Length: 215
Image (cartoon, rainbow, N blue to C red; front, side, top):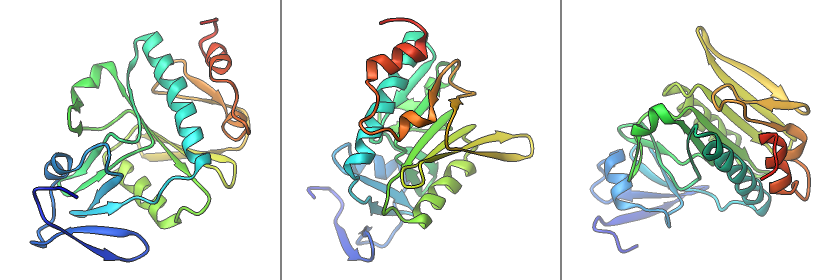
């Protein structure tokens, strides 16, 4: 892999890339050794190869990323990043959410090598064939760092689980239709039905509806 640290591979249901020293990698080492061309996450000090995304996943990720990014820029609300930006969970754990939003008052946590702090919104897309254990592990990680709002889009069940942090923990809402409004991205909304429509709605037309004006 052309890295300065030798790595060995072992096969399970996914590929784990382990330091030959058997010493767990830190998040800082992880983001230094691996870049945007490496589709991997850091789990308990081990580098885990992510399963290749299906087209239906990539299509929705790109569509929602485009709408949220342009909306956020138009409103001056903050920074939106895609699935190549690592988020630090712990010293030996890092995730690459499908979409991340960070409010403008928190942009200092977005650094060159990754996000070192708690994003305000995380979106994960669950494709048919993805393992439930993987999605639950990601959800637990985002909760552990206190992400205020989490969208878990389930393409197979055609539903969105919305998790919002309250005073006594996370409140959950499952939506299969209607308008999904963000509480952290001011004024941003999408129709749940849009997320599961094939083909997806035209980006410009959908964005004009969300913004309430032509662009």
